[in-house]
Image 1: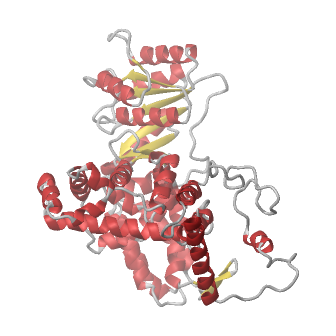
Image 2: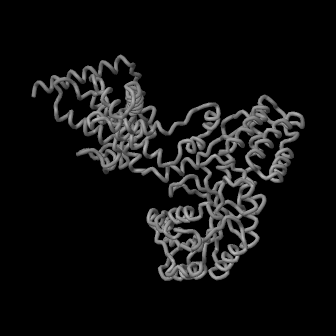
Amino acid sequence: MFDALAKGFRAAREKLTGIAELSEDNIQGALQDVRRSLLEADVELGVAKRFLARVKEQALGQTVALRAAHGEKKVSITAADHFIKICSDEMVRLMSDEAGQDINLAPKGQPTIIMMVGLQGQGKTTTSAKLARMYSREGKKVLLVAADLQRPAAVEQLEILGKKVDVPVLRPARMDLSPVEVCKQGLAVAKVQKRDVVIFDTAGRLAVDEKLMQELADIKRECAPQNILLVCNAAAGQNTLQTAQAFHERLGLTGAVMTMLDGDARGGGALSIREVTGVPIKFVGTGEHMDRLEPFRADGMASRILGFGDVMGLYNDFKNVVDEKEASENAMRMLRDQFTFDDFLQQIGTIRKMGPLKDLLDKIPFASEAMSQGMNVDEREFDRIEAMVKSMTKAERNNSALFEQPGRFERVAKGSSTTVEQVKELVEKFNFMKGFMGNIGKQVGLLSKLPGAKQLAMARQLKKMLNAEGGDAALQNLAKEMVEAGVAGKGGMPGLPGMPGMGGMPGFPGLGAGGMPDPAALEAMLGGGANASGPRKKVDDKDKKNKARKAERDARKKARRK
């Protein structure tokens, strides 16, 4: 939705490329691009003018150092970078809430009241349920109160949404009660049930009128909510500002919720509402699903507008939908080269839970620029992949090597209404990913800091040495168990104290409860450390290979004697 804004800032950055000093002449063109994009995005004219004036004031006459120190590193700085940094800081200031982004809490022992207000059709009921889900997930006891008695089926809608988010809904005892009486009843129930948060879903109108405002003012007077949140649609443009001003003058809003930020609205209201009305944005809705509500972060929004993505927002999305234990198990299966099509399908499902793919890519740094240059985002590709995987047999999903047999590609293509080429492409990409991750798991140098990676590599080397022709079966099984235990990184190896999760190997320094020794301790154990009697001799690769071959021959001879 911020395409118009991002386009203007990209154009400004390009015009300043290669310039070392920001002057009146060279900055004017960049400011014009930014001004045009702000107005196209429906940013209020006065807000746009003040924003550009502050940016110009800070940028003019500043000589930009081409090199700067960042810790121990030297980084390159350009005039374009400096200009965008000024814009970013001003945009964050424009949207930030000095009082903080959290809601106002009630005194201890009292429920915190959130009163949702706004015009009809802005998404109050849905947002109320989303908010209830958010606080319920944080461990708070929440109660929803259906106080919208004007819109047909509004009470029933809230009850359905309440079941979805597993939050109780208090409906009017009688439909002839007034909204004020319903809210007072809801507050009394919340106190008896010791609820932490109570949310009033109030009625709306197609436009601001006296009857609506008086009804909301009566609820405020009788129930004294700590939070009054205006729900407004991002697609409403500058009409949002007029609505916010009218509600704020009558009720004293504590915050706003911007809905439908996932649509094609131009988003100017998000930049203007704080500056014009003084009402901070508290939450933003980014989709229809109940999990698509998140606290508003001015720095994240500014970063997305400027084309730098929102890494923190992306992390929060992953955290909300990904099970940490499950993700860890999947990662270790990939490193063990045991990743299957079922695991692949599960990962696709996780990505889809995070919302629209276009919105997800917007949060990846510089992905928006690639999308603006013609990159196609087709979410139907997920459906095609899912259809192809589900058309495979269980054996094929567990072992992609079976596709080397004739006829399998054709059968999957028919079952998924795709082409043979599409199925082949999917299998090739899957095999490449699986092989790539499997190879990483075998190279301890690439993942030396990953828990269990060193143990995995050492165990695989041992298995390779013991897995010679005619080798002892018991030793081979032990090597296999060591590989599995080395990957798991927990629980220890069967019968071998001192590996991960066990209590240490008696008599050997450096093998404590943490698992394998560090390199220094291992070197000392092998005679090359500080406690060694003399300098360690250098061994070349040829000697190592000879020793390995001799060890294999000795193992075979020993096995034959038995």
